[in-house]
Amino acid sequence: VTLNEGEIRGNSDDGLHIVEGSATLQGTRVITNSGYGVYLSSSSAVLNMNGGEISGNTGTGLLVSDGSATLTGTRVISNAGYHGGGVYIRQAGATLNMTNGEVGSNAASYGGGGLYVEEGNATLTGTLVHSNSAFYGGGIYVRDTIGTLDINGGEISDNTASYHGGGLYVE
Image (cartoon, rainbow, N blue to C red; front, side, top):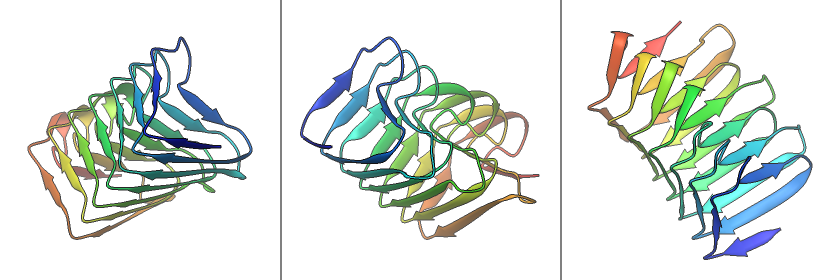
């Protein structure tokens, strides 16, 4: 599926759920869905997103339970969830590559307001992680024994944690 300059908005469950196959979003907005903005749920699920935004979703902006997501110049902003308000990398086979993006103003009830890496791998290159909030890891929460995070350039700033790790919390 390819969607250019469109919107996935106001749906009563996930905005976009990829079980198998791939979706390419160019300049597309995934906004105000009452569930996950985008949900990848199997090892064959692939998301390629250039530009656009994932914002205002009430069950985490992007959940990569398995599969892979590549975001370039994408904004993940103003989402909310229990783990990873902005982005949640859940299982060992899950992969995120984000380049020149923004993860900002997201909130998580527990950990990783901006990004929560439970298992799997995440790479941020030239990405701004800012103004997120959570109980642990306001900006980013990493379960280091099973999840990995590589950061190349970018900035982690102005995030808030109620307990520990305003910017980054590694367990």
